[in-house]
Length: 229
Image (cartoon, rainbow, N blue to C red):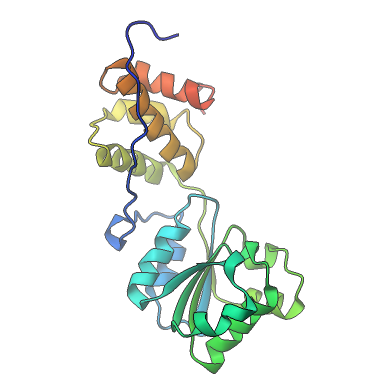
């Protein structure tokens, strides 16, 4: 229960930075970063980055897009009729390959990596070998590609991410509050974004700076137990 006057907190758009200088590297994502960095020396002209939602796949895909001048397309939008148009770009980021509806079209694009030297970076929620793919040739092709997985963030990365996300919102937060949140929140990038947004919202509603009480209210609002992990 929060006592005292509150003000209405309006949801304001918060732009996410996607440049290479904004990507934070740790043991959880260094293999994926190394895979992007070694382009264009990919042996097969294509590669796969996998990881859970919010882990940074889109961010790394954008870093590679800037390096390669690639276009971006969601896998569910890849259709056989669009293959010539997509191939004309020369380089493609294909997001969320597990959601592909037209497996034949995706297989055809991967063939063009060899035939037309098309460059492709695919992102996926799961490793290529764990995807449900009905077309045997596509399944084999995906499993043969260089692959790097992004692991759940470690404590060091989450701490830096929380500090950066608060700073992006012009919020100075005591390190002890960061530790308080870190010990009680879910261990994911999505959770970090949700926690920072909710702390910001609660601070506005309670007309306070970010105190432990504000942090606790945010955790409660998000359904976290509030107990140390």
